[in-house]
Length: 288
Image (cartoon, rainbow, N blue to C red):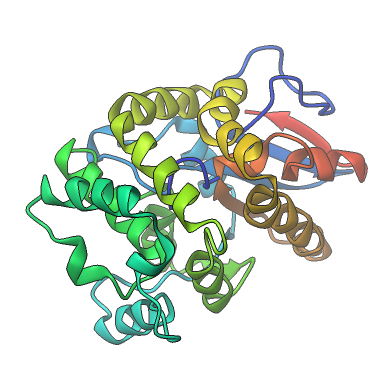
């Protein structure tokens, strides 16, 4: 997912018993003697950033299962990848040239050309898919590609035979991605082109903040631009999903197991972030 979508955080989170200084992007969420862990993740993380901060390993080792946003198809699952691409292609006869201004299409074409690629061959795909391609190419160019925190723990939990649960379906996420920028395609692509110019410094700043649990900086890098430029998209991508997840997270307290919930770092901050919503329901939140 792109930087401004995945998930940011405000400095002043009204959390019970939060530590004075940030130490990691992992929180312990408690009610009485029962507790779970909630960790903020980076969906795209260079291999040089492993091993992860110790708080992640501690939470994982103390948990009998993990909870991820969704069950993302394996990159080697050709059938699943084809289904995803089909969902993100236009089916009504439109193409990118129909939804973008000539100047924007030219700028997009120039962007792809620097990687030896042609946007003409991708005209049948929606802006959400184009955005993912832009992100992938920028990550490869800057040598910052690598599996994310979610994928790392997914593989580890499978290896350790721990229970894996999900907050939403694959179909939901694909549909959400496929509809990004709908009705505002030109603005959406231009915004992404602007961000790609600063891809590496933004990524480095965000990763540094994520490692130390600096939620104010994560909010600035990940969420602020989307919230200011497109409040409706921010609500769809962040706020509404946060609220939908709360009941599912609360259900984790109905058994004797300890779970480690892993969601994009942007979901753990700002107005109505996951931690704040849990705090409002009486849960004790402690940053690790």
